[in-house]
Length: 74
Image (tube, rainbow, N blue to C red):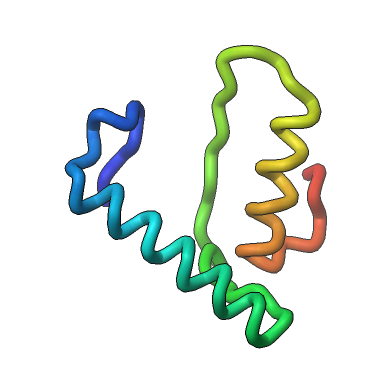
């Protein structure tokens, strides 16, 4: 498992793979109307430099969709 602290920690190929995977997940959502349990049984940590409720909620909702987590605030 690789930790991502800053974007420069990734190679060009790794960035292209992330974008390709994101595109594939989005295309699958458009075709089926359902999200994939991509992050099911995985942990995500989000650290923001500045407080931003709107940004935090957007990321929590996205993570919720990808992991089928039903309790958003626990």
